[in-house]
Length: 309
View 1 (cartoon, rainbow, N blue to C red):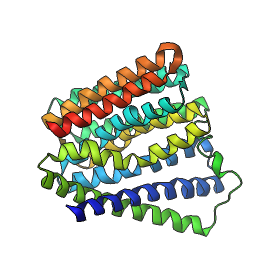
View 2: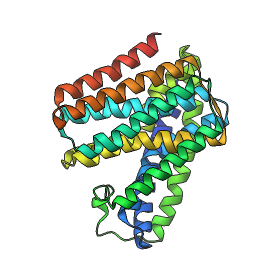
View 3: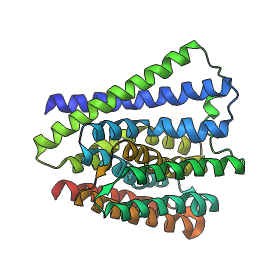
View 4: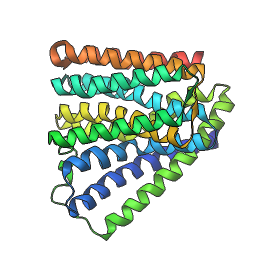
């Protein structure tokens, strides 16, 4: 148990540092080749912060741990909208734009409902995975045509820096780190679940989900300190959508996922969580400290329920 716990912590650190290396290096390299900050923000930054979820989800699916694979995505999205978003609102109330609610928020809500409905068939198959990937591609194309710049704030700390050969090496090191971290996290999580006598789904939707959401937590804290509400909200809602359309979509396209009753229950909670967040954001176009505390409480209550069930 002790060795598994240490392994899990090491895996979380590898995922955290690996994702940061990917985001920084890839952004600088892309800029050197004349790729716009819009494309960088929507692809590289989104992939970088979701890379831990992707590696853990794919690794678990290919090794036959379907519950950990699906629960990691569901749990990460609940953690993002519950604990991280709630915590950020408690630190500083968040002002909200109509675009985030009506375009990005409703798209995430609709995608979550679609996944829930398909899950009732007992399997998320390849055709559905491909449909999610097509949806992601369409979303990126739409944003590109709108000529918005959601990636600009994320790259603010990189201004004045230029890509060198070291960033190429760091990019490779980042992918190696998250690959190793994802493999170690799945192995450690499976062993911990066995030792604690709880299901792999519970470990995946709680501990693994929190571990793979570290990049989102760090990015959100940085945005909160700088008072960049739209970057913060866009990062969390966008990351959740990317987790579903990109991470889950590609995973299902590679290997169909069996959906357990626990998974359907988690998806129902997530639909409710996304709906609650949208209502809070729409009410007064502001997320207050009290509403943030409620989101954190819902997340913690879910964790307690999972471990005691």
